[in-house]
Length: 371
Image (cartoon, rainbow, N blue to C red; front, side, top):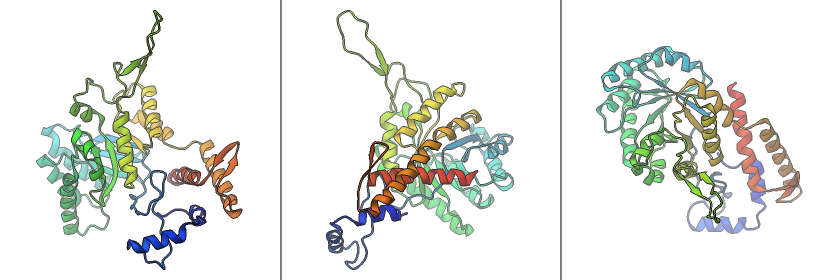
């Protein structure tokens, strides 16, 4: 989606627009006579490079359910989660892989998921189970599967391999609805190559942070799934004999921020992974708030009790929506008056504020439409 009419109007007043058109003609990106095409709004800026954004989906909470449990899948379908992910990978023992795959096919045929996004986490590309996961689901389960969640993605070649297989089976079946990809970054190789991974396929919709396997790949000294580490922090400076305070840090801040940047720069949704403390709702809420503050679109839920919290934290509040609408109204008035910035409630708002406000209003519209 290109910038809104309001944003385009504000940008269009820039005195350098004729020079930009001329420059674009010289580099062959647009004809000189054509209107200047603004890039998509990504990462708080506009760019000449137009990046295709992923198919819009409400993605506040992804509820994972093991493919071995046919009783839980219908319950997940009736939950408040935006996305239901039926798992064929980590939660399924090797001896149960075949049975779980048959369950998934049956569930996709019979369970009413309503308007939810339905995804299947397939087995890793290094596993022979992955091939049969893809083939059986596409050939036998109809078109209800919206996405494949691909684990342990290490580089662009991994994505290409998955894309090639899915494309071949879809073509054979004459499938009309293309399956999207959610790619899990859960090892150091994947984190190192996250930019090329994000750009590797038009099927890509989201990047996910697999914190447990990632911590193992870095040899981090923890056995927890997400959450803080009591040993990761700093002491205040020494001041004589006074006691020194210890402040906990966030060992996952870099990894999460890295995924957010790679995802948003390529029009994808960044999704935070699991939090293992299913008996710690306050801890889960804190993890959600941290992710939302960094720009994450949503978070995994590995227990139904986590769904409500994720939906709440990753939804804009009524106050945020109201202020966003007021910002858009103020900037629309400013555009008519030839102003680039105005004061609202004692704070300056400008073109950047339009992009922030439009993101909030757009998210709220999706949430209201899903009710």
